[in-house]
Length: 191
Image 1 (tube, rainbow, N blue to C red):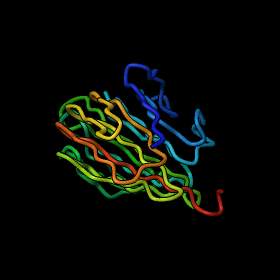
Image 2: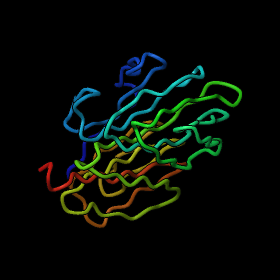
Image 3: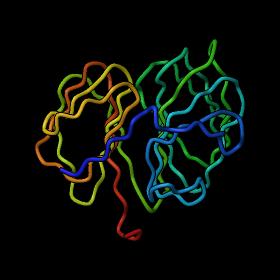
């Protein structure tokens, strides 16, 4: 099994593309890619004030509320209430998106993929979850609440820690709390 541990305390906070908040990148491909040249990017964002989201042309996004009272996202004129924790909400990165907070700051989990170059599936898990990494895919496990153990490796992950797994068969993640499993697949035209 090929695993890279991604510790939460090793991530710097950087301003959003539009300067309206802070983000902490968990992982991206290619590694250390910027906001204009990633194939996929996964991060945690601190949202302290209402306002517009950054636009990402040609990018599909999935946002998941982790902490806080939630928000109303207006995506191309249609309002969506994102107030239940751990429920992924997909939307287009080039959509005009505005955020109104529902009572205070929040933290969200963001997955972004460059359309036509990668796909992502976000699964929220609790308890013990068996998994295998599909051929050619990357699996990113991120603890959103509590802790988790990657059993075959004996690896303990605390809150907001992650593990980037590129090769695993019949593995198990034992979650005490909540984790996100993100399956990322680069498409053939990107390889």
